[in-house]
Amino acid sequence: MKWDVLIVGGGPAGLSAALILGRCHRKTLLCDEGHQRNLSSHAIHGLLGHEGKSPSDFLDAAREELTRYKSVALRRTCVTDITPLAGEFEFSCADGSTGTASKILLATGLVDEPPELAGIEPLYGVSVHHCLYCDGFEYTGKAVAAYGRGDKGAELAIMMKHWTADVVACSNGTPVSPQGMQKLQEHNIPLRVEPIKYLEGVNGQLTNMEFESGEDLPREGLFFSTGCHPGSALSERLGCKHGDKRGVATDPDTEETSVPGVYVAGDASRDVLLVAVAAAEGVQAAVAINKSFLQRDGFS
Image (cartoon, rainbow, N blue to C red; front, side, top):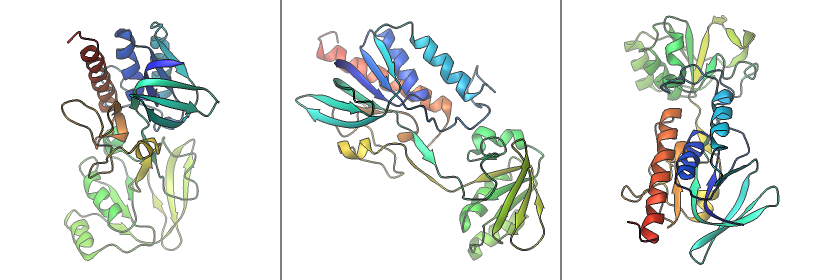
């Protein structure tokens, strides 16, 4: 089947793009597996009009809104391959379906790499987090920990000091540099270098950190800095150039990547990883795509 646009990824960026393209009467297919980065979280923060809404409710509402637009189709599957061919793109999906599209929008996001700590699973997204801008406000005045190997935990702890005074840096058995130690001392932040044995909690709420040696550390929240990786390898397979911070680079004038006809939006492309930013980038990419079609068809 032939489509105007194939959107890969159904998070805020992909869904926002589909909404705009539907309103532009563009025949659009959005493919998504349903593994959004923030699904483990209980609430979205920093998105005007949706503060505190659960990610799953937000996504369900967005998908429901798209049903109004008959030119937009949603498919619960993973796009496994995209091949440029004679001015368009052939694609195939994990469910066996195939098709062609004139334009591609990659909204494949990122995958976080939570620390491998015993007891973290039921706490992740509730009282263990990766984003201060998303969840830091809720820990104002509470006792928190900053996790990261080497200087990563120290750097995060210093940033967290703005949100709450009671911060302890944890390096999980890895050394912190003299420079890192000095900065922690300047900000009056304690450091625990012992390996973490277990995270204790009740109903998703962190209560205590147990170490291999030394005293336990009662905490109400933990933020970590352990990195993330792209949610898909499609941009690399297509040959898209990447920027200094590993995000896919785009032309500021056309919004295209280095591969003509391929666009990118959301966490896969930028440094500010917030729902509000991802949704805005989806809109921006969709407008650029529609402008390209208008120019092609002589309407601009």
